[in-house]
Length: 383
Image (cartoon, rainbow, N blue to C red; front, side, top):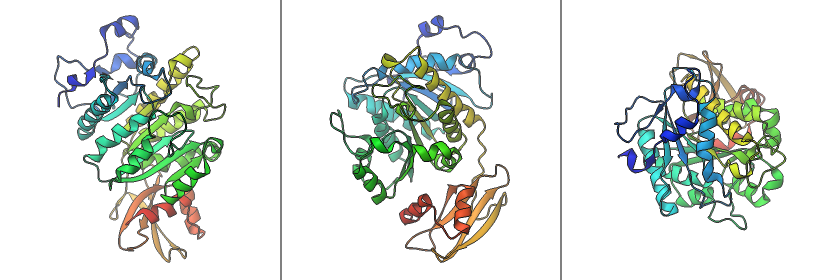
């Protein structure tokens, strides 16, 4: 595949208009894509802008990529252990399908080279084209969305079917799990909650996440795709959205979530959606979006791949008997990072097990003969 067919590189005017000569700046310490040079497979992260808004009511979000890029470039450089390239922006196609296709092709190219795409701009419906890239070669796909809504049911006035309903209709065997972090109950219908439970999907309310931010880390550690929607942040912190909520995450919390996701070592696509400069105040939302992306990349620079297996020697094993499951369950604690995992059995075939991320609090609940809701749902989903 030739990237130049799908990408508009960052323009020279962008660099002339921004003072990026200081050595401590982020923009001075990353590579930029050029159509005249061959692409070298030496990067950890690739930034991609998407100036698309035909599939959303959030008109104005197409202007976000270059504004977020400007704010990001002027932040401080990150640990030299992570190499970053800015590819530029996906070429906007004549039709929405053309843009979707271009994004899918570029992501396939990057993921197969073990380069993490950071997609900025556009709106959450772009997740569908990202999912199509994974569907071509991934055995299991876990999607996590940090969002004030669940995006399961189409709402009145929506231009297109929601991305999640389209993914579900694919009936893909590789789509394993969807988790929402930060939904606001008054913005979600009871039918959506019921459908989430029926499909054994996970949803963490905003109130729970506020007081238990550390409990989101295992969820983010198991994600392949993370969709970060700006409407999950309260309006006073991020006014740049067409339909903001007075409630939501604080800026410090979302930066922590972004860092958790970068440190996971499993997450392979990070998306920053929904920023709309048209409604922004003093570029406050664009500044925050850039800082969220910065914290994600910082997390990538600190990633330590300490996932266990059954023969792991770098973990402490804890065997717990839970009478509700009527068998021994093995927990693993990393001797390096103190992170936890649990080996879960299948609900039908006790010999088929899967190791997933968990927290110390999950371990304590198992010891008290409780089964955390998230882990119980996972047991039901394992064949």
